[in-house]
Image (tube, rainbow, N blue to C red; front, side):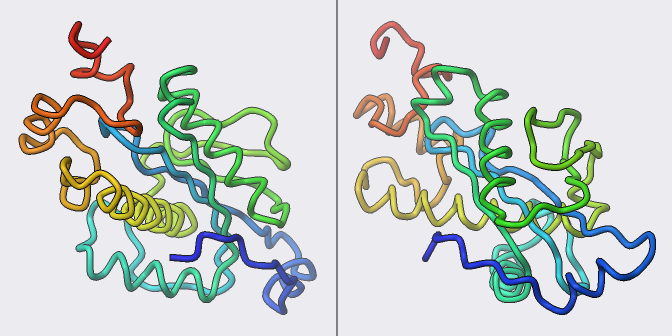
Amino acid sequence: MDLRIPRIREDRHIRRARKVKNLKVIAGIDEAGRGPLAGPVVAAAVILREPISGLDDSKKLSAKRRDAFAEHIRETAIFGIGIAEPEEIDRINILQATLVAMRRAAFNLGHIPAEFLIDGNRTPDHLPAPARFIIGGDAIEPAISAASIVAKTVRDELMIRAAERWPAYGFEGHKGYGARTHLDAISEHGPCPIHRMSFSPMRQPAFA
């Protein structure tokens, strides 16, 4: 997967939005990976340049539909990715790392919208445009749903890559979450460099 941010062009949809009274260009932001024991937290910011039917919270979609939506969003929308690595999560805590990843996604968008809509109950500081949060926004706001899908699929791909480097942990299956097979692998092999040492069970005395 090529995670490079595409060069942004101001296409006819954006130009039209500028001309229509009261029509605002908005960007949705969401994250994936707050709960896992390993791997980064990944955020995405998305400006939809055309309506996409059927968008929803990425967790409610099958992997097949999620991947199909992600491909379509990348082809038709403006998007930016922000990542906070495990070391950063351990240093500043998962909440702050999530907000940092969201801020990075916003700046990597390459376009300043009229407003950012953030899934959850907090907004990152120092964004390049006004922002407001929407609780449950990934299920009701299409731009946030799109961001949820992009963030989830990018993070899944990163964890599949991690599985190739550290095959003992089975990251390709559980994506770093606390599945029984993952916990057993940690017990047998100890943590690897992408485990979050501030998370249980890595706080066990044997691993501290």
